[in-house]
Amino acid sequence: MHTANQLRFSLPSRLIAKVFLFRWIYRGPAFAYAYDPDFKPVSSSVEFWQDIIDQYYNKYKGIYYTHKQYINTVKETGILTSPFGREYEFKKYYKQGSMEYSEYEITNYPNQGLGADVMAVYRATVKSRFSKYKLNSLLISTIHDSVSADVIESEKEIVKEIFLDSFKVLPRNIEKCLGVKWNLPMCGEISEGPNLKDLTEIK
Image (tube, rainbow, N blue to C red; front, side):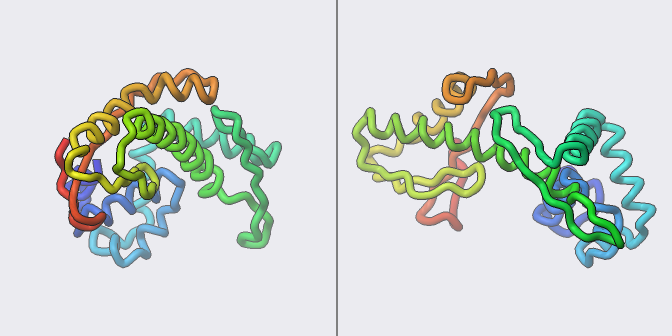
């Protein structure tokens, strides 16, 4: 997706294409693109970027209506509840002469929080299997949706299978742990290397 957007808008890098997508998802305004040095070479016109935003919302109407529902709920109650029952309480900020809620926070918090809850179940699944097989390899860190492990050579194959199979059973474990049926297929990728910078995808 990021590569497709990079080509579509002639952006200088895939990283900047990621910025484009996530800024849109979290309701970044058109002027944020128009005045951003990374996007000015494409266009410095607010109208151009507003048209792009409108095209995306026209294509992904479900996201648009979900966002509007979130925003309206917070305007009425100040609180938003995730599908897993986690509550987010929002406060107003002074903006252009009035106190308003941040649409960025309203659309970002539930999404990031839901992802964190899913990954917590995944980590627990992986940890349980490490213990079951009495592995000497160690889980060492998580970064958003990435889980890192220090793996000894003789355990590399079984760790790969644990990481992949834990994704396959993740929907079942989400329902078991959080009481919510999860109907989105889950998959993962595995990379290996001597450190987190020098990684090669292997599966």
